[in-house]
Length: 339
Ligand SMILES: Cc1cc2nc3c(=O)[nH]c(=O)nc-3n(C[C@H](O)[C@H](O)[C@H](O)COP(=O)(O)O)c2cc1C
Image (cartoon, rainbow, N blue to C red; front, top):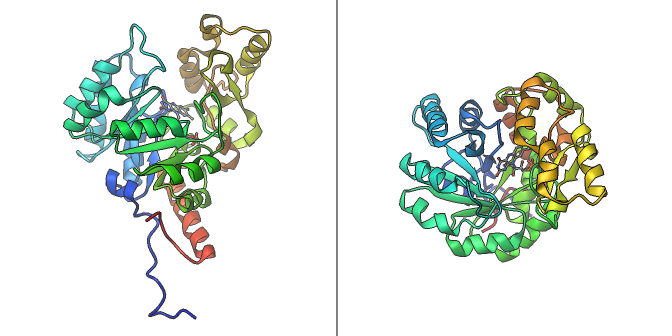
């Protein structure tokens, strides 16, 4: 029988190796969102107790990115925030990663979320500039490589995620269980995580935190038209689909006219980027966010879309996640983290 003296002290789920690494109140990252994770959103994420990431790919050049970093610094009165750098899967002519990384080091950004390809070439430079590096991957084998490269933490996203789940997508629950057995550095889990109960599940698996994209798309601070957000509130998990597997760049997006066209072409055997690019260009997505016409463009959305109920300011969404996590732990009768 346990009593007040023999019961173990309850451990606060908010305090994990990841929240300590990022110096955040919550072990939650509001990760990179192309066109959407701007200074206002990132500042709201940091004010909500999370780490947020200005998404470098949203800006046409480093000068525009530097201006946005400056704006975020002012909004946050100098408090720490991150930058997301999605590298192209292969080093191609015109790749801007070198100059973006140089800017990040120069600006002494606290945390960098990398994704897309092996970050090894950049890890030492970023760390010597005082940046913490969290590398995001869809497969455990890439996480192991990043661990060897010396990143501080990794994020592993499962098949449910918005954006890129990799070419052999594996569900988030399975990824988490595998990662806990294999990785020595802290890891976050992402992909379909849209409730506090799921945060507790990720921590129970051994993750040190979570990465969330889709759940926050309907936050007031997300710079997108209200018609797009209304569509997301109505959507079911099955309203997302995968495109671009034919060019080995699978992407989970909102099902719409564009996905029907692209899937029809892929079904006919079209498998070259140049033929598909006119339908999936980033500019079309950007225009859809501005106009609210969600029927056009490849709009990254994860299966967690089916778990969102109403639009709200980001701090209200975060408060709901925290309350759900607290209630889930109360039901289980314990808190905890991987030792
Ligand atoms: C609209 C949208 C845009 C995204 N843009 C990027 C990006 O530019 N770079 C990146 O690394 N990940 C990007 N992602 C992936 C997210 O950072 C994150 O890994 C993913 O959303 C987690 O899964 P979830 O959507 O199920 O929460 C994007 C996701 C969404 C939904």
